[in-house]
Structure formats: structure tokens, C-alpha cells
Length: 79
Image (cartoon, rainbow, N blue to C red; front, side, top):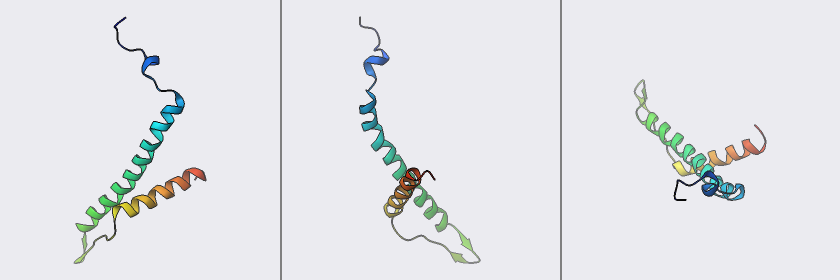
């Protein structure tokens, strides 16, 4: 009676799983957008072409919200 828990004892009902996973997927999508902007800023700051240095202005969060919105629209319109 004191064995390891069974799958049915630890699994969430589908509705509860959706409530837990939906914000996590949204956060992952937002963080992906922020990571893309930060990576490009890093790359641009270390790039020079014929003596011209590059840089990226703005905020990562602004780009991340835009990326999040575009990805939502892409999903809603199926491409």
C-alpha cells in the first residue's frame, strides 16, 4: 500500500492541465522572442563591415511582445 504513486494518482485532469500549460507555453513563446532580440543585439555589436560598427537600439521586451503577438496571429490564421 506504500508503493510508488500510480499515474492516475498524480495526473492532472485535462482542464487543469490546460490551465497550467497554457501560461507556460505563452511564457516560452515570449522568452523566445526576447532571446532572439538579445542574440541579434550581441551579434550586431560584434560585427564590423568596412569599419562600420553595428548596434541595435530598443528593448528586448518590446520585440518579445511583438513576436508573441505575431505568433498568436500566425496560429489563429493558420499561417
